[in-house]
Length: 188
Image 1 (tube, rainbow, N blue to C red):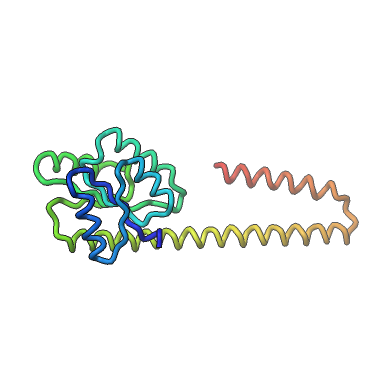
Image 2 (image 1 turned 180 degrees about the vertical axis):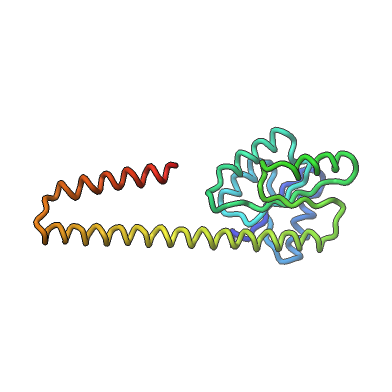
């Protein structure tokens, strides 16, 4: 299932392969991404979560990822598990990212970590993402029902106009005004 696939971006050594192996052993599908661009493209195709090594997020990559995440639909907030090293560099990155809202839904895990910690974080992230997809589906159903209701009301109004002998132009003008107000509300 594509919405449960975990994207992995860890450019140093064998980190990406090891993370993918740990996820596979834990029953999770993983797709290793070679760059931030690849991760952003894959995230648009309904990924479940992303696991990223902190060193993958230099300032240009962080900016690209923030732009990618800001273009998500309103219901979407891709869970990101960010692996940061210990020591002074890891602490500085940890502080900078934990106070930044640019990435949104981020969990920071300090390396080295136990595989159970990674699998637990991924399980929670996928559960949250599954809930987001449920909300998306409910919003789509609601929009469909609103459209069906509007079409039914339109038919009923047309029937009432015919029955009462009102000119067609009167109803059409009222509908154009209503539609303009709805568009203004949707835009704002």
